[in-house]
Length: 502
Picture 1 (cartoon, rainbow, N blue to C red):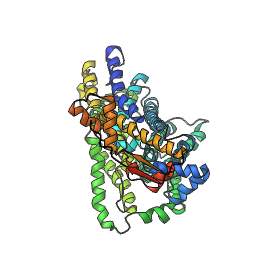
Picture 2: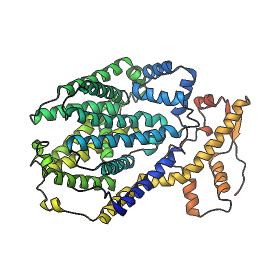
Picture 3: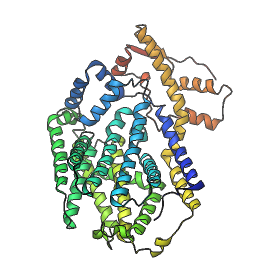
């Protein structure tokens, strides 16, 4: 079997060092994020209302996203976001990896007969974790902007756990825990539908596709799948009819946009989904090795009874068409309902779920055609070659480069905003209705001068003064909204230069 990594000796040590280097900037960035935009609205909501009242306000007054609203409420109500803004980001990063590890381990134990050692499953989970970060259409709001990330990334995490539980439920002999598994799966289904609209529509189509696939290939259809599908559909209908989706949110969309004008937006968004995936070298490297692993595993006795319906069939093109239709089917109702309004952060879920389906397709395609390349069954690639290939894929990413650049510029960005926060808090304690602050660019220059009093290279200085693209940039203090002023208990913020030269 083709291995993702070597698991012994220097090769393994180098692999873990590469994983650590790739993981480091994303962890550091968690500590440089800062409250922005809707975060202040949420903070005021839970400051002025009880937990239950805030849940009702969000459900009936906006989109009915009860699951993500509940999760965001836990963080806001029981954590001081202004001081511990890193906790949600670190939590999302950890649970994304944990969900991927759970899914891969479920596949390995249930479907592949413990084919891979646990150490390789662990290493592979980090590969898929980085692939998720690299393919995000908007990394800043995907992980580091709380109000957005909790809505979309939590849905992806729940979906991964649902897939793992679904595999364990449908491919294992029923036991006394079957009822408990069904309750857990129904709970996960309801939670995904209650996170956001993109994840809800995708889940309904995905479950329908599984049922249709079983019927098409004359396989027994697990009746419990109909229960999960019914739970998802009924929950979606209930949210639509009872929450503020139609009465409030829909009215604030582009109501005067023609449905015909939405069609090119759908096409553009579909192209955008696949572009975010195929532009990443790590995706192609992972897909290739998954295909090779599928070819070698398909020739083994362990695969004899598991994938008979796929043997000898070219599934790549039909599979790509089905995935394309799945993406179109998800985007069409969402974009039609919102009249084409769908920010990039809303695409993160669909991109991640499409990536999972594409990678599964490559493995199944290889497993269904084990004789396509007979030499693969005995092929052995040197460990050094494996390490070089994976290292190039892990580090050749625009999001990875943006993360490191944002680490340096994000430090000073956070320092400037933290200074402003302290000014606002002192004014609030002293009952001062107005404060004066420096313009962001000037405050940033002062911060850089404090750290580098003798100056630095021009290229480095440009990096430090750039807005950190990998975390959500917010400069609302210079044009404060009433919500922003209310949060800090201020009436006016004046921006005034001091004209100092450095």
